[in-house]
Amino acid sequence: MGIKRSMLRKLAIAALAGTGLYVSQHMLRKSKRAQRGELDEPSVVEKPAAHVLFGLPTSELGLLYYGALFAALPASGLKGVRGAMLAGSTGAFAMSVYLMYSLLFVTKAECPYCWTSHASNTLLFALLLAENRR
Image 1 (tube, rainbow, N blue to C red):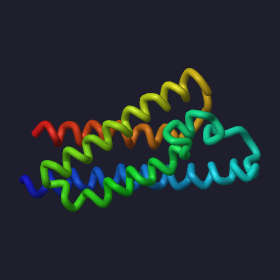
Image 2: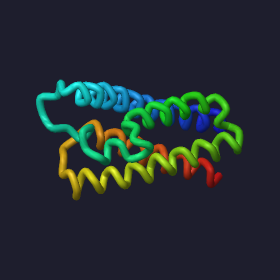
Image 3: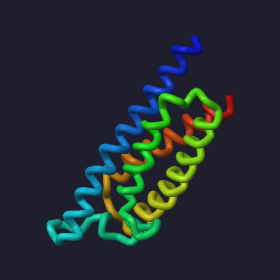
């Protein structure tokens, strides 16, 4: 039973991180197009919230975070690795809460890719929090 649960947990993390990677790479490409003036419509990638940390596009941070989750997955049975994964997901979730607030109340922009990423971050945080409580 433990092996099956462990495998399902790893598959869920991989699926959510894969979703996050897809969204991040899409939004990074869009951000680069915006820098070159190639967007036909306004986009959230042009808003200040899209560059919250160190002036980097949030999508670049997402690529690093989701890539790190994939890299850590094989060793996720170790308590320290699970703790590091939880710490990363806590930061990503906190960033998502801020960006969700921004989408809803500041920019009031529609962004299905953003919401997909925020949902992935929320589910990853909940999954890793529950796993670390065991």
